[in-house]
Length: 235
Image 1: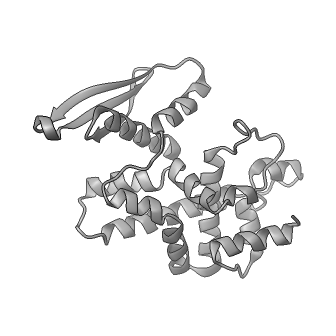
Image 2: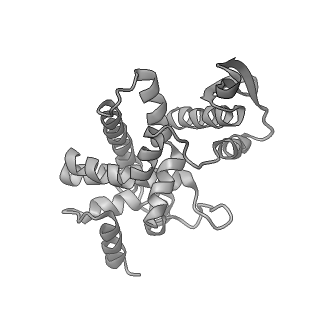
């Protein structure tokens, strides 16, 4: 597929036509591709526009949660926002429109079992959002973002959990550092036997990196891993 057709196809899937198509090309360009092409300025790949998109994404989801009925408390909004904007959620949303097939990736960037890394796809999601914001403004960016993440948002707002194995994703991420010690420690059980709520703390090499709450120990551990992944993404 030639480049022009490639970008046209993705625009159709996004249901948005860019005024400045170069913004979409930049949003889809990974640093490894730019380096292989011999171009290394900040506007040749998507890290800067992804930074912008990340901020826009947080604003859009924060606004959605703020306006949600019934009214959510601050702590609940923070947890639900973290679930919606996490790496696994964003990559899943972009995969639904096969967005990963349009990313310009260098040969040096390895895939996992032939599958593009979720981190790269999630970064592309944020970069595309940043590109739409620059091209058309906040309202259009918000509309497209909420449509792409509709499934994740509905699941989280209904009190459900996204079907993502956060524990495995966290373990894979941390094991890049070599031998690691990951512990999920139960710290609290509340409520009657038929309706208990469990709280766990998550430690990485004896350092606390997250905590989680759930209606089962397994759910609480998944939530703790999800929060830890979000903390690692931000820092």
